Structure formats: structure tokens, C-alpha cells
Amino acid sequence: MNTTRQMSALSAEDRFGKRVAARLSDTSDNLPHEISERLKAARMMALSKRSVIKVETAGRVLNLGATAALQAGGEKFSWWGRVAATIPLFALVAGLMAIQLIQDDFWADEIASVDAELLTDELPPTAYTDPGFVQYLHSGGRD
Image 1: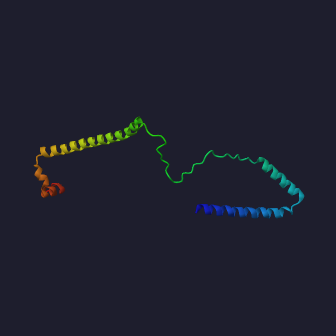
Image 2: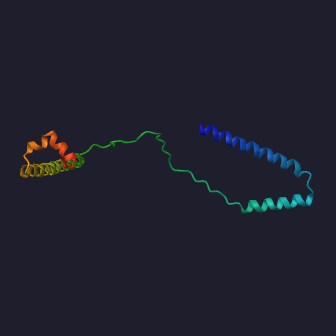
């Protein structure tokens, strides 16, 4: 859609430019000789000051569209190349295993500290499961 809009905008500009040029050409015949010579000199001066655009062509244009160009390459990996390609995979797996072990140790230490607090408390552990005790704690111990 954008290309059709751009093309129609360009054609509208072209038509407008041609109409303006035709109108100016028609009225330039009625101008006095002195004014037409001054306009001619001004046109020549403007053309001499105009910068020349240097056109350069690109060496090669590659159009891949919207596809990803991921290729394995033309050569086969040697044995060392395959080993080197698997090293990041092993490092990732080892890192994930280390994170899991550290997390397990952290949770085990936290659970052990909660258990130690429960067992060394003055109340027996069955008091925490009593619904009346939970209600007593929610009321702020005002009973």
C-alpha cells in the first residue's frame, strides 16, 4: 500500500510541476527582452552554483527478504572442532547443576533452622496445628 501511495504522490507532484512549467513558459513569451535576458543570466548562475551529485554503484546487493540466513558452512568440522563446539554446552549444564545444588543447600538450611526453632520452643509442635491456637495468634493474644 505504501508504494502505491508514494507512486500516486510522485505522479501528483510531477503533474503539478508540469503545469507550473507550462504556465511559466506561456507567460515568458510576453516578457520584455531585458527581463528575459536577466532571467536567463540568473538561470545560468544558478546552474553554475549547483553541486554535481556523484553517483556510485554498490558492489553487490544481497536480498534475503525476511528469512534468516543461518548456514553451517561448506566445510565439515574436524574432531577438535566438534569438541570445541560442545564445550559451551557442557559449561551450561555444569552451571545449571551448580545453581541447583546451591539452591538445595540454601532451602535445606532454611528448613533446618525453622525445625530447630520449633523444637526448641516452649510450646509443643502440636500446638501450632491447633485451630484455636491459630485464632489466638490472629487475635493478638488478647483472650
